Image 1 (cartoon, protein in one colour):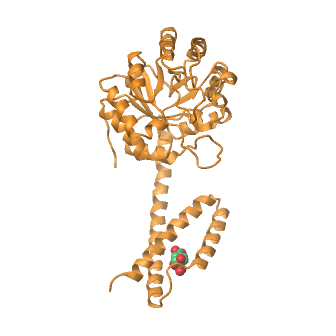
Image 2 (cartoon, protein in one colour):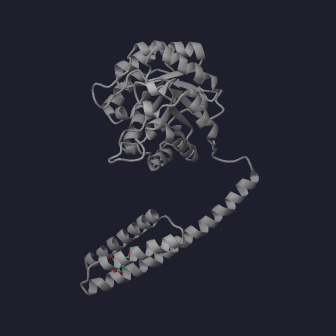
Image 3 (tube, protein in one colour):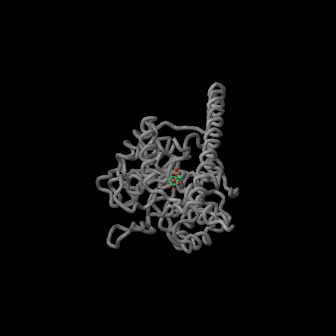
Length: 364
Ligand SMILES: C=C(O[C@@H]1C=C(C(=O)O)C=C[C@H]1O)C(=O)O
């Protein structure tokens, strides 16, 4: 299914953009000085296009710093006056949205916890009706692409056309390297169903630690994402929220210097020719793969009928365990990833057993 929503490209609302969309600024605004000093440095780096600053902070447990509240909106206005950068913040209910729009913010975003709640998204969307703000929608905390799409549709139904999706990772169920694990599969699925929706990445919330920001940002560009939202604080060691994942504007610049920006295609006929040639080879190999799978299925079916006639079970766990071990070892010799080989053969086997039980149980 493809949903061709009427969504503007980033260039429609940021015509002078000539690089990926980079949004930077502190996790939380803490004082007017902190907001302006950070913004002053970020604005000097011409790769930063939008300034972000959290004003209302959704916290998991009560008692942590929950943001400075509405006063922060006036600091964002000052940042805009002084730097000329468009400014944005996160909203989590109708009242935040009303206030943010009244303060003339250019960008507002819906956070991961809010995206997970259709009622919250709807109340925000109702306030957004008739606004020209850019609305960004982070993925919900759980990797549910339908829920993410639902939030985007609600905002779209409110008449908003400047929409951007943000991949900020998903809540892990166990200790993982990253604070919120990236799930590129979900992003690919969103890209496939909403092909004209700009998608950017929020490496700060995925990483949880500043040392991982570069690798996640690079992966986002490798995956064709159209920008980054990165948290930057004038003095991260003193940050009142998410200190470990913020970087100074200078360190942000260093990360940006190292990043390789990638494009959907290259303006180089030699590249295109060689790519076509290699893709033709892949097409041929894929059709061979499918023909071989089809031959395998024929044998599996024959074995199924034979088992039926001899009252033998479809699932043969010993044969299966040996086969899997053998295929994984063979795969290793051929330099294939172990998990990949396992998943591939699990799928093949699952389907064999399904077909054989069907053959055994079909009505005569
Ligand atoms: C094909 C068979 O049936 C099942 C399917 C298998 C397969 O797809 O390779 C292996 C073992 C069985 O669980 C068989 O018994 O050999």
